[in-house]
Length: 125
Image (cartoon, rainbow, N blue to C red):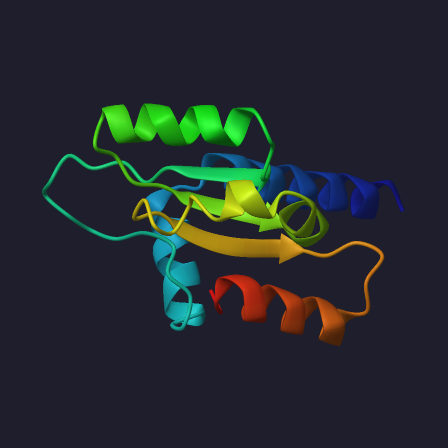
């Protein structure tokens, strides 16, 4: 019984290590197992992908958009549906500035209605 617990603990530890460190060999295996998911884009250019989650925030999202514009940088904003509905004026600045917008989820809203509302207002992303 003790050997089984030790083995389970060791496997759990290895799993956590792989999850947090993401060694490239493990990532390569995961990429082959899930060919329709993009985990990374190989490039020789020095680029960084920026994403901002859980917005929009009526103050901070606008500040971030200003900073990105000052540096001619683009980002992806992952929005929470009910916040996007609440702060439509903030959302209206994201795509015209050349950024991408994606949805994380809606709260307190039936899934079909949430999908229709987001797609109708801000496109399907």
